[in-house]
Length: 181
Length: 159
Figure 1 (cartoon, chains in turn purple, cyan):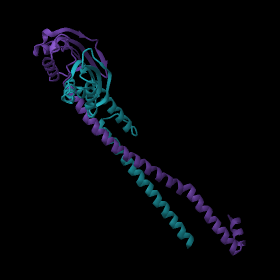
Figure 2 (figure 1 turned 45 degrees about the vertical axis):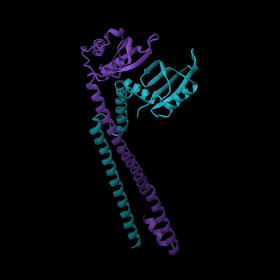
Figure 3 (figure 1 turned 30 degrees about the vertical axis):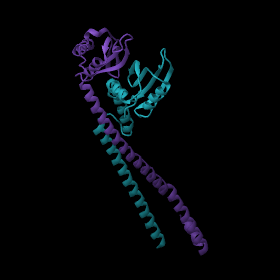
Figure 4 (figure 1 turned 90 degrees about the vertical axis):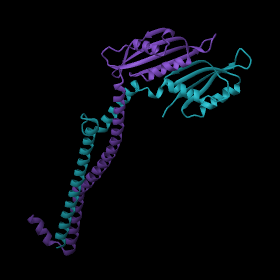
């Protein structure tokens, strides 16, 4: 330090000016590189993160609304599912529905299908074959199924008029019902 | 004097920058906490900070899968039959030989009196946006006079 002071004293005024300016530039550059630039970079990074998180909040809010609506829809549908305690029989239910619209005698086949499980729901299906049923009777059966207290759906319907008497129809229906597995 | 002034200015600038970083960091922390709170309120627990959106998307997708299994309200057979009956063009004779409704897909095999009538039936379904992929196939002359047999296929797409 003493040596530096000695040298400084021997410098001419012009040289002192050059050294002082040079030192100031070096110090300012170091200060910028070591302190200011990282702080500015940090500010930019935090700004970007804040903007992204704010956007995520908006997106989450939209998803929350969608989630609530879907959850309510699912809860409403699940209320109509038969209890999974084995007391509900789709075969018996179909027989009752057919009887209620006076077409029980038109049933020529009722074939239960192998139950399958999808996403936590057990699917029960029955293939129902009707012979010589008339359109109003078939529609009455479809209405009875749609208005049933349980969620029973017609997954497949095939109608063919009889060749000798087209008023009478041969119909094949696949009726499915779900229960919580 | 100028040196001291410069030093004071530098210290003030540094302080200002540091305060700005601190304020922005606090804002970011608040936004993150708000996001987490919003997630917990709507979806319940179960997402680590930073994973909220991914977990929310997963939960919505799970609900969609469950609804896809048990919600068939858009594919009501009765509604599909009703739409079919309403869409048939008036004044064109049509005898249905076979009708199959499979979910949202409808296949109809019918007979009418001319190829022009087949085209009119196709156009009648094609103009309604409810019916997608309307196509007519296997159009041929039937066994009797003035008889044209065809197959009409479409998918019902309810909004």
